[in-house]
Image (cartoon, rainbow, N blue to C red; front, side, top):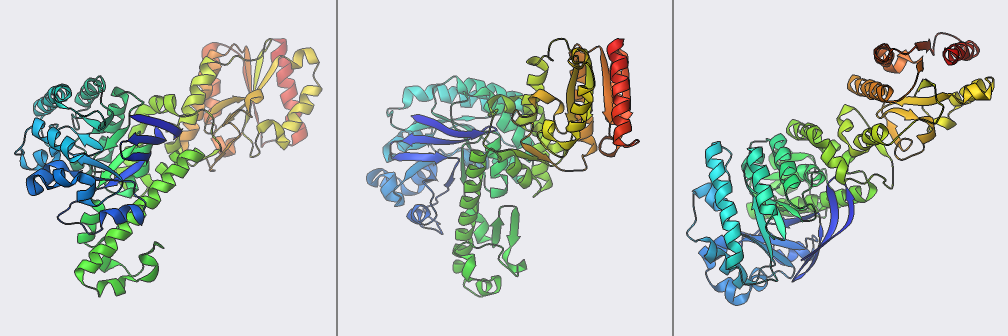
Length: 541
């Protein structure tokens, strides 16, 4: 197997996965094929919609069609000239409690039909099971995974090792570590369907990240049953490379019309908010008047267009370094998705570890939900562990952010430079200028052009949580740096005295002098004079 990563952002990656039938690009969605009831012909999925691969169920094929897929070969049987993947029947175990075949029979069948990507017959962890029952599913899945390598006979198939444990995150961690130690080509998060059906996307986010931490980072991760495009961006951001979905067809049977932000029901619609080839020539009223089968095919194909369009948006967002913004945008489509994004905060250091430090473009910061994004975490880590103020620095002159960036080129900084020119060079060199700004905290002026300190835009007014974060980061910075005094130019309009109070408290704690000047209380000339008086006083102490 070859999995080559071309681009990455957060834990999402654009990659090339090589199989015996061709190379596919991730993130990738496998539409589920049910040969018995298939509203869209498999080859049409590739030729018209652009899906490079499909997935079908080996257990169902064996039960319903016996040796026919073996004799014809899976690709010919499905009439699909692309990459094929097979599930093993584990979902049927979850729904019905068991299947008629054992693992050896399923593995042999998957090899005989010639699939490109295959899944072992694992034991899924249900949503309502006790922890003791969940432990049994993890243990049995691991036992079968180890046994699998004595059963397989072909090396040209990519095999999937599922991670089990369900909502019990400690068991997911154990399963991921055990499965990751075995030489599988791909891993999958098992048992997510019931989690999503219960709209527990917060739990799903924890499951994905816990699994991701346990398996080798270079291996692709598949998310079974990730049906709705509204959650694709968050799943990719958390590290899912592959998905499968039957929702495009299942929704269509019920007249459920997908959008990237949710689902509408056909009888309740007056307009199609879409310009895909299906919706561009129809109206809901026209479609409702057609036979049920035509409506089903129409909606299924529309749903496929929506899914493909969202995957392309995600790939472009990865290339642009804007995947967080897309995931944040999608999280507001449903409270359950926003809950998932909020859970990511617990794992922000893990996200920062594998996300690029420099990107092709800046970013937009909207509110405190963005504090989890890697650029902010990375800066926090580096300013406190890799930075030292210039030599001979004695006093910190702390200024509020300006609208213009980089800060040292802002009109306000010209006044500060003129102020320093009126002070003897020997003393002026002891003054270190830094900016407190959202969402980073303290930014030393000499670093303000380093990515992303000037390559971002922040929504104003700044929300309270972000102000408190900036205050906390400012406190940590002052605690760690060897300043003997601090002067703050306070700006109540943006910061509501929160920064002033935090800086004053930390200076008291460190037992160093602290002075403040209100930026809006005097004219510019008086402000500069006051600052000079305070700075000279501090430098002489």
